[in-house]
Amino acid sequence: METIDKIKEQISENAILLYMKGSPKLPNCGFSAQASQALMSCGEQFAYVDILQNPDIRAELPKFADWPTFPQLWVNGELVGGCDIILEMFQQGELQSLIKEAAPKDSPEA
Image (tube, rainbow, N blue to C red; front, side, top):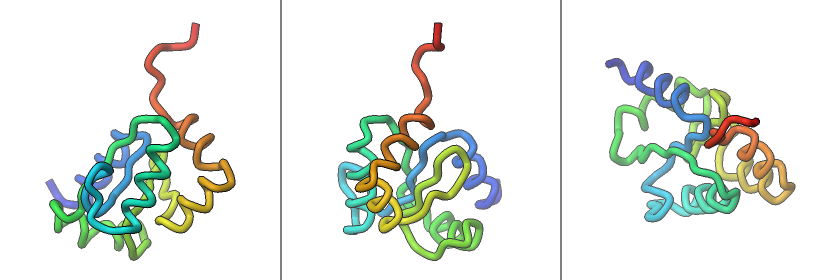
């Protein structure tokens, strides 16, 4: 599978996806640590891709997204942004509502 196809598949299969360096529990950079911490504080499950383990994605995603840096947060197929935007949205309460709305619901509404 082509790298771009893999990226598109990951974005389409995960409502909330963070491309980061390391993992949420063991981030390998300060920006990824802050971004994943803000996401975890929202209280919903999210998927992540460790770009350090995926050099092909690390090389291709900035071109695909037209966003040069990591981390990158994608919600419902749309690029939200990087660390600064994530933290700003979190501080303003916007991230929490965005994540809550995007989170997969466990049970259908009755």
